[in-house]
Length: 614
Image 1 (tube, rainbow, N blue to C red):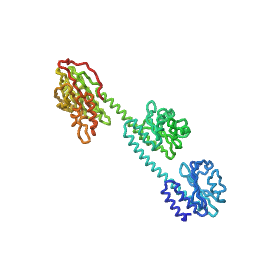
Image 2 (cartoon, rainbow, N blue to C red):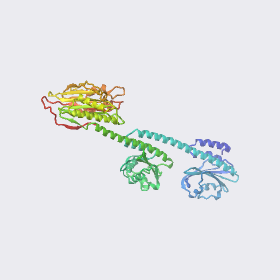
Image 3 (tube, helix red, strand yellow):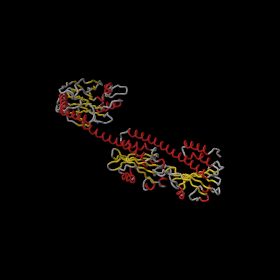
Image 4 (cartoon, rainbow, N blue to C red):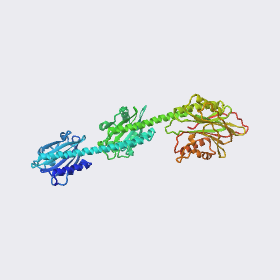
């Protein structure tokens, strides 16, 4: 027996309610004070799901320290009439008049003949209701008992409301954290399929037990990714995502519907997610027949949701979640809409990036030669590495052309800046130089005429370029004639491994109207290699601040004896690996002179065309 007054007991009850994480934790603080009320011999409480599903019943009798607790989930159809409205209802009923069909408390109350049952029914939430009642004898002040019941119920309802509110706040905080992490994870990749896979991985198991993601193509939904907490069922989900006609039809029907739809029970009949004994048994088998829907010993009904992924006014795909959890742990439609919106934007960004990348690469291909001319006297190769992660079209270009006198002209250049304007100027510069050099124009004149054309076109950007002609000589050497317009000087790798710089210089193109360019001549011998490059190679910078230019001669010397293709690719990859900062494109054009025997015919040799490196 509790020896406190009801006032102090009620105070303790409010204190306990403020700390409780479950309403059931208040039982001792509610039952004992009520049982101490004069005339009360039994306190009994019930908890109901929906109108008629009894979840449990708890009773404490006077003189007993141990409550009787009945945990159940049985249906009591006649109890549906007891379901309260929004406000608590207090009722007095003679125990003798209680019908067992609607009052599971009756059996306990009949142990005290002539008793009256004073009961308060009240709603806890939209999913269920509860009752708290006492059995009293004739000595009880029933009005006072009713007042105490009402006060106790007020505390219970307030406690339950507070628990729900704290749960919602915690869930909201967890949801916000998950959405923030999801955005970071999804936005960190610009690859479409990787972004979709991340969407699926992020959601499981935080949001659902399984997830499938589809991308919308012109021919319909295309399966991209699936995941599940069970590896066995992940395989089943992947098969469903690729081939199941029920799911394909569902996604097709969804179309552009923006609302998230939840499906369960009969709505899943005929689907691979239907809850059947067969599915449950299969989940305990060897995995071949496992279905997503009844995992292990979990008996919660399967629920699926489908959310449309829409970004910038168009549908990009859908995400389907598979749940095997209590209804209370299902995510809200608002949360799923927010997750779908973030996923859709990340996917759309990846799609746009992919389209842009293809467009840039296609344009870049048209700005560079698809083939290089080769005779048995020359070993030519090129390499091009895009350095800007945003993939704007770069201004680097190169080309190699044969000339009427049997020589070969190499050209390489770099337009200031990136983007469409730089691309237009790149095309103009390369094709102008190519046409002039094919006609036999000497390097200096070709650069002067290009400069004049740029000035006439009022080009807003300047560019650098270098042109080198390689003319075979009867003694087996070749004459190297080089003319530069502000471009990095070419390097020559001699057959003995020494490296020298071709010393030449001139004004940038497109700056002044009348500019002339002087040529520098030197001889190269058999197996000597000429390397032309843009400043993206030399200005690749390591973390300590040093440029690749400082070690380029040593790295080039180490490539003595290799063919042109290996030299071009190796230098590009070395600079790329060396670079901790700098995002400029890297272009290289490499020509190795194989030599001709003295007195050989120096007329143009039959040409082959070989593809350049891209």
